[in-house]
Length: 477
Image (cartoon, rainbow, N blue to C red):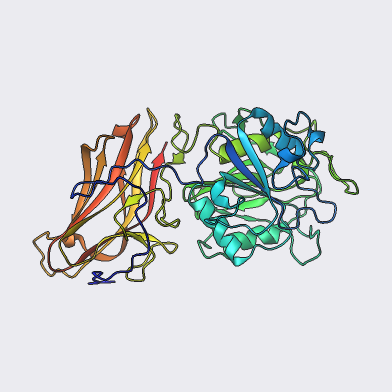
């Protein structure tokens, strides 16, 4: 809003950290990562609140919910837990690196429930058969955008196991195209309305891919036993990548397994539920042992992908290698005053300015009175990596001068002691323009260090200048 003044702006957020230095210098508190980032043990939530047990399906890791350990606290074989996904669950549990739970009610993000998505690193959706509500879609998308991992397991079109008119193909496409966070093909793929009876999709040749070559083994093939594929749209999301393809297909069509990113999070798609079915489960279900199919490497694929999604492979959340990843938590500010340290009211959903995407953004300045406001986040940049800070910046002002910088914004890098290591850019009321402009800065010179990224606005005593920031990234390659 050109010429806006917010001396009476709404205060919709609070300080994200305690012990801030309330001076004209910086906030230098090291903040923890958003809850969606991986921590040890890596927290995985399997969904069972959307008819995942309807018909012959039995897509659970255990009949004990939410905690499978109540059935057997130290499982050694797939039959120690009951469910067609028990092999998946037991294999993760035996490593000692994972904490597994099952959700049986509506999915939420930012609430107080034990199975709220904010308590987990990865959400597994194993062939859901009821539509997600509007609130659930918002929760899922914000969870991923703020750093969570999403594992989408589909099935063939027409696999409506509870006869409510919707199958997993329709449900996943609805999630991606009909949500309040980003409906513009956010993951860069759509699920095909196909029913492919059989096949062994082959893996691409990429020795560096952590899903195909992870700690659980090397992936060569998967299995289709009535499933579907995805169409990739890299023009919408350049991160989308097909890893296994239906025979005779490559590139953007026929992708049976694909990965992508959204915001700070990661996404994996699998075109059939048969590969995760271990053939054992509750009595009365007709199951298929795709997990142990000798013509495929489905177990390695499922487990490596879970590892990658949750950041457990060391490739995310400030890891120690240079696998492509995005390091900032709450990068689009949609979790409000979390992860960042900020002057009260800076992270906001006020209608005084507009977010570039979503509802929240960071608004520094805009008061029309003398003062300083800050926004900062601490991050560790892996050694030997290339790193790029990106953000979208909008500046509007009530100043009329064309020669004097009365109000300023500095983008700086500080060390853990609060010493300024470098100033990446300085902006002022002279840079005011309509709309958002993308800005990028190299941080490769700070590889191997834990640094604080700080934005500081300083206003004069009369007319306002607003510095509005959204959709930040810190990409490491």
